[in-house]
Length: 97
Image (cartoon, rainbow, N blue to C red; front, top):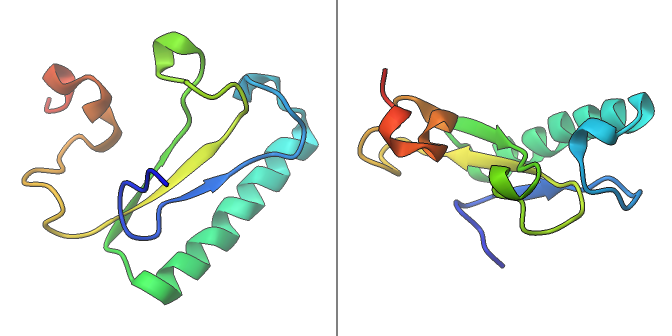
């Protein structure tokens, strides 16, 4: 519904929990394996040039849905003018260093 780029996907653990840091080791491993599986599917379908992986934790970190979800965001050459800094762009004035 709020796709940032073609192929943007969420990995969502089954257990209802809001904080990524409270996931147990099994959930962390399962999430990591699912991220790799999803990446392979996105690669085949959309052939992106790069990726951002992101997790919003707590209100100050931008979390608006109180259930852990991990964003897999495919990136494409030219999708923004200057992608330097990548995930650091969440604080725009600190993006480029």
